[in-house]
Image 1 (tube, helix red, strand yellow):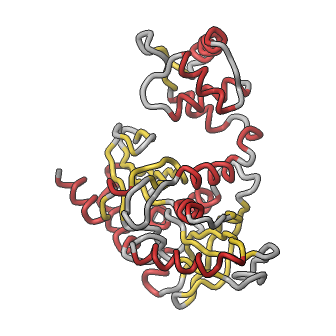
Image 2 (spheres, rainbow, N blue to C red):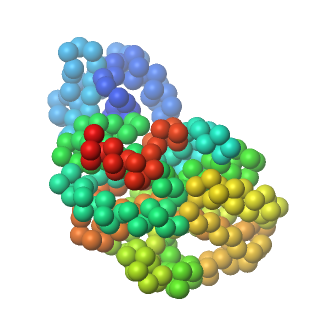
Image 3 (cartoon, rainbow, N blue to C red):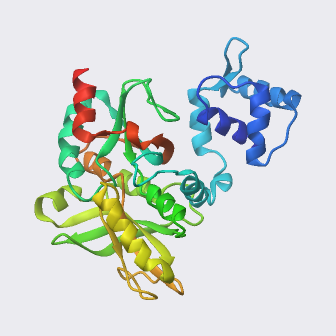
Length: 330
């Protein structure tokens, strides 16, 4: 499969419903690929033959399950720097208004078996009451429903949690540039973050580091909730030294509004949690929005996670308790 086929599958995967050759030709321009409609149709026929796309009554194409599988494993070289570029794009597209509590935020999307929903709810409830989530507002959907741009697989429950990249967008809109350096696992002792035990750089990464840590069961959210000692998902960012006062003011406002969970700042030009920072930079710690799902994975319930998955209107999210009640009893 060549780069053009990869791009076509990417467009189809992100699209709701069928997509025709005219629309595909237009959207491929954002991937740096300029093709005529006739050439697009040629590639679509090749993808049909491979079973990666499917014709829908002459209205256009959709991606098949085989296509999604192929997309997930093909062309690592195409996905180098994928994560950091996605972070920058979502930060720019976030238009959340902290005062009105309206606008688009970035959601992580997680799936787990519908038959495990009550067990998962019981595990996640205390996490959503802790400071180890970005927000206690969520989206909860059944199989074949959608959360933003993502369709929940049949037999699964889809959970949308506010991603910490939303913080980047909020800061950017106030003129504070944020550089996301690492995703990691932070060790917590007596309720205080002490050091990173694992780190993966966002730069050059083709997959979000936090997804790796969840799958590897490297967290101990349960320990934090029970004994104030354990390991949680977090990320290390940098901001300019000159912006520290405004950043601290803004983060305090976010937390008052129910966003941010726990945000910590280091000292100018000094290592933060034993990690060096750049010249004229300050280190910043933000908790991972996927910590509730990490707790579910710790308990032996298999999950599938897509960090930074979609934009979603914040005012349409429900508190964890309200979302659960609506889901279970509607």
